[in-house]
Amino acid sequence: MNKLSRLFIPQKSNNYHALILQPSFLSLFIVLYLLNQSVLKSLTLLKPGVLGYSSEITVEKVLDQTNRERQIQALPPLRFNSTLAQSARLKAEDMFATNYWAHTSPAGLSPWKFIRDSGYKYSIAGENLAKDFYDTESLMKAWMNSPTHRDNIIHAKYEEVGIAVVDGVLGGIKTTLVVQHFGTPLVASTASTPEEKKLNSSFRPEAQVLAETSPLPVSEPLNPILIRKIVGGLIFGIIITTLFVDAYITLKNKTKRMTGSAIGHISFLALILVLILFARQGTIF
Image: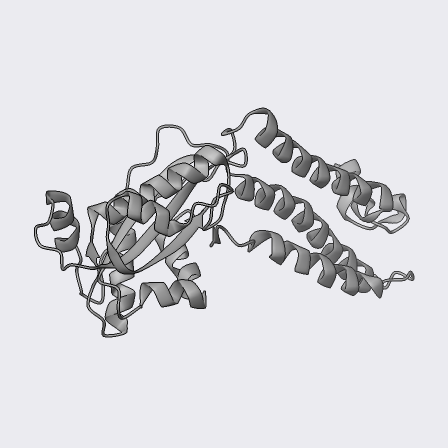
């Protein structure tokens, strides 16, 4: 027990300096954190798909929340169009197949190419992309905080939307791609498919709606962001806690040694901890 206390509590046996705060232990923490980062990166190359992001996003939820944002702006809801949904799926599958993350593919294929090839004739069209999001709420918040993506969602001239939520491996990491294809047809749509009728009738304009749940997948890939947060949080949490204990005991016992730097160390490490714990999930394009 005395050996353990020497790690965290300043006392005569450790020259009134907690061992964890000494350079050798701090260096060990840095090596462990960097080793964790290196292992995660190596896994993406050696075993693609082992790491990934489990997602509870569905087409229904994205459509529902998209139309809620339009409702806030007093705009009519977008009709779900299966042809646009097909073009959105083709775009997602092409990004997985050729390993890119952009509106235009390395082969020069634009979003409009996928929309036209699906048979949708439009007067105006647009595209929103997202990946690595866990839930629809975070995804929609990111889109609405981006002026260009927000403009697509609340564009007054758009009448229809197709949505694809597709799982695959991109850059060695298993992820979920979400693609929105917006459009207004050259000729007004007439008959709707059963899928379109179902999705278009599912939108509920009430202000409060109970959160929907979806079953967890049978097996989920390891989440690299969560692993980084856990490892980084543990390391920096231990250091910060020890610094507080060190400063408190030193001041309480009026130990004569340099303690002024402890406050600076606490502030610096606390900032790093906040950055780790609140690392942004997902990216949009």
